[in-house]
Image (cartoon, rainbow over all chains, first blue to last red; front, side):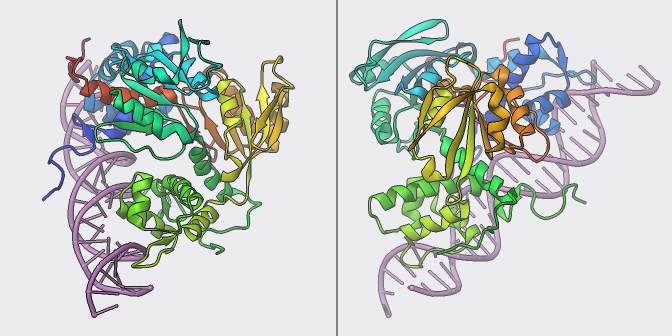
Length: 232
Length: 232
DNA sequence: TAGATTGTTAATCGATTAACAATC
DNA sequence: TAGATTGTTAATCGATTAACAATC
């Protein structure tokens, strides 16, 4: 007797989470192939360029439909269109970025955000000396607004990006949620508390480096250390 | 008959990948608890603060050893020490950052990098007008060096961070690998090709946003669209 | 002791993989 | 037709979860 409603825990409309997380990568590779005027690609080739196995790629695509031709492969432009359509790239979402330090500015000026279905509609910073400054966000230029404008700006957006110091992250998060934001990308270390129904993804450079570092140290000939030999 | 050498595919010394990827998060939460002078924590509490279930937390820790006291919980400082020790935080690794735009500068000036076991030992940028400029990396200040110094700087490091535009990423990656780097963190879109034995982790803001966006669009009342109804 | 909480087991679940029938 | 490649199945594998005996 399952505790969750039967059917699809951790899935959205029968597409596994793991598959959803790879689709943007396939899309990216297909964009590159189209730019090179490559018309057709096999699952083997596309998989290799995407860093996955061919079996995994074909299984992933099979959740969306069947887009290839047996004996031939996939039409690059057609498959790109199908995945883009499925991911909803054509219906842009509005993004607000809070904390316009180096990181926030990097996100705001990220090239190709428009091409991936996003519009920067608000930039918020606590530092009044930066308020009023313009940041080039792709084609357009967006003015930095003060913290007091957070709620108003957030109400015009569907996605919030938190690029503040960790100490401010939870408070910013609360205000975004209060303004109706249900999708948050945070760069701040630490776990954000959000009500049910709000999705948070976290990017933590320190965590990524520590994962890399662990394996690096295991391979390193300079380290006489063994895991399990915990000192105290 | 397995194709991989029998034993532990995708594992490092019997610690599952999924567990390894959560350990830095636990460490971070424990650091916070120690700063608040909280002496003891239960698996339920620590798990909640880390955004995982208590069962998962206990299972994760069980791969490293048994650090708690039944009926009581975990000593915060002791557990922190054990995980930090196990992750190797005490033996710093040297990091080179290539591409000192907003993103590279954000990584370089990331606070607490030292506390997590990293030292920035090299900053490289192609823009000669920025060469010579100093960037504050925690306690110390590091001078930006020209692209020509990449190999020399990389030979002094164990980890490479690529924060260049996508077009330069593969070439930078090749040069890092040639200089002996085996652990790479890249922010550039697209998959890097590396020889066997080199580990790459990729952070792609666009991909993260697209994953968030998909679920956001599914919930959105303004979207009449259904997956599966692919247009062309 | 009684209450609490760990460490571990066994069951379940989701993701990956290999293989192959279908078919261009 | 012969060769190639997809879409799908069934088996395997890894990760998660619930439950509980051990024990502080």
